Each structure stands twice: as structure tokens, then as C-alpha cells.
Length: 246
Image (cartoon, rainbow, N blue to C red):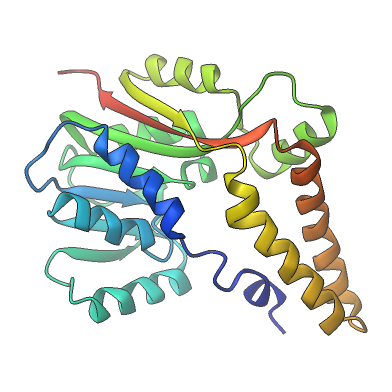
């Protein structure tokens, strides 16, 4: 039994609407001729392939999860993108590329794994002077979140913070903020939590006599319930920034 695979199958893929926000963030960058892009924490490569389509240049996706990379590699082959899209197994803490070798570094829902401030500092080394970093992360959309949701999300993402606090960190670490935008208030409900809730209800019935599975599903349902209760506070934000030593 792999209950997590059953829970997230299909839900972990980037939907067309989710990719529309990737396109919006990319569109806020100045025009670049076939930029060389590093997608840091690429997962199964949905965003990486979209960046290849948008930029027309060479794109490298790096991730530490081997199973996700195998899915990504299959898509590269299926879509005949092997000449300019590459899957790389590795950690953001041990990137082996030549410093200052990318026009754009992209990090969607990945930089929290090493900490926001640490992440934008590490990734800065791989951006050419005048190049760009785009980060998409969970954030407090409104100030003073209730203690229940605050404690829950700090357990998941210890460095989660409000939008102004993220911007303060961006400037402190030597970037110039170009633009930022929050995803619509109801997006994560429609795109992620509602489908997840339906999947949980189905699996609760399927595994009704399996205590281990039920314990996992109860934890997941608690996460969904908290989102439904406090969705006006929690969301995600794209930050588009330029390395500041131009």
C-alpha cells in the first residue's frame, strides 16, 4: 500500500490554470532571446517544460526526488525535447552548474525546502549579472493569521511569512523586485483542496478497515479542514526579481 500515491495521483500535476500563473510571471520579465533557465526543484517537470515553450532556449530541471525525475524524463522523450530540456538529479544545496551561467533561475514551491533566505542567496550564485530569479511560495495573504492555522503552516513551512516580509528579504539579499502577485483567493481550493477532499472521502471508504491508512487520511483531512476554515489568510505569491549588481 502506498496511500500517498493514491491520494495525490493527478493532483500533483500542474493544471492549465496553474500554468497560466507561470506564464504571467514569465511575461513580467523583459524580452530575452532564448534564455538559459534553471528550474530549481522541478518535480515532475510540468513547469520546466512550460518554461522551455515560453523561452525557446535550453532549460535544466533539477530535483532530488528520483521518481519525479523519471516521470519528467519520460515526458522529455515523449515530447521530443531532449535537445534543450534536461532532467538533473541533485539538491539545491549542491548545484554543480558553473556560477553565473543562467539568465533565469526559477523556483516554484521548492525554495522553502532549504529556507527562503538561504535559498535566494544560494541561487543568486548561478544567475548571470543582471539576470533574474522567480520564486513562487506560500505566504500569509492577510496579517495576523489565527493561531491554529499559523501553528499548522509553521510546522509545514517554518519560514512562511507575509508578503511584505518576503519583499524585505528579497531586497536585503541584493535583488531588485520587479513585480509580485498573489494567486486568486479561491484558486487553491478549486485546484487542489477540493479534489483532494473528494479523494480523501473515497479512500476513507476504501480503507475503512485499515488503521494505518485511516490515520494518514485523517491528517490529510485536517489539513483540508484548516484550509477551508482559514483560506482567507493562506495563499501563494509569485515574486519576480533581478540580481541587483547590474
